[in-house]
Length: 332
Ligand code: PBG
Image (cartoon, rainbow, N blue to C red; front, side, top):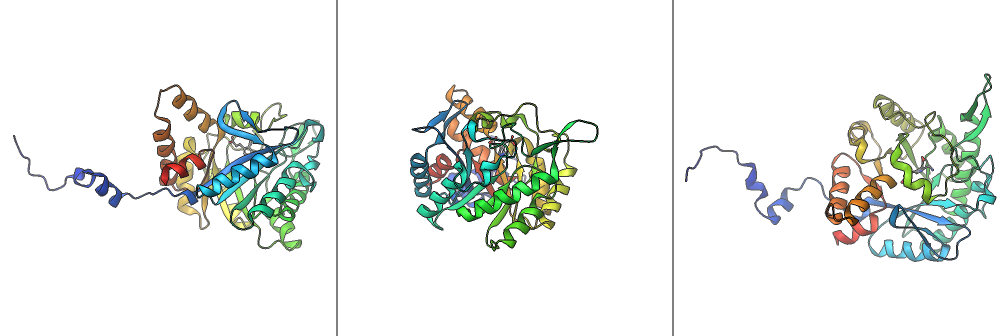
């Protein structure tokens, strides 16, 4: 057997599990994960979302139980989305700032139940609550075209964020991609004395087909698309601009979304951000991994952990993922 005489053998550091652990540059921890959850009006028991196995539209009772389970697994934060009755939707999305609306009512219950043991985050966007399904309110421009009206929408975001803070949210998370939304929300929260409520800004959010299963999850009424406010997948420079603006406007966290198809964006954002950087592994990413896993085409648990590891390695400090509880259990 010939022996070569080269000094560098990278395989030395891969020779057994203990050595690999010792040199691992990235480690996942249950506290990295934020669990997105859905709570719906008009259902008697939790209802599985067909394209997202293991993810449910919850009733208040099943939500409380599921959050308890997440807490036991070591999860420190959940992100709540509300699914109102169609009859409660209107052009303004006004049920989003009604304290008795599905989202605010359940935020209140969660905060009562868990106090500061679980960080309660709220999705701050109108799309689940408008009858047209857009993230903002509609108006007509001077050429007669229907548009999503940026500044009129900001008034509603302010009402919504204040209602969420009153309901007990620790973190509000504007996901509608309106210009100036962070500044508007920060001002409204501060004016009402909610200086302690943090803002996680969906800063770099792309008009992505990977959101497909989410639209089923929230019973979206959207016709058309969101390309006049969410970003074009072709671009990365504008993500850096969006992130910088959100930081200047007072964002406590910035976010990149989706995650795996946008790891290059995530890395660039992580390089420039002085605030924590979150990434959202969205519904379509989850659905694809579940589908391939359930078909026996990939090893579901291994691919789940590798996907989360790659998102963290690319620069995410927090990961919003529907796998949060499964991944936390796998880690312990
Ligand atoms: C908007 C919102 C969306 C998602 C999170 N917040 C949908 C959209 O922008 O169309 C998508 C999340 C996912 O796909 O998992 N409220």
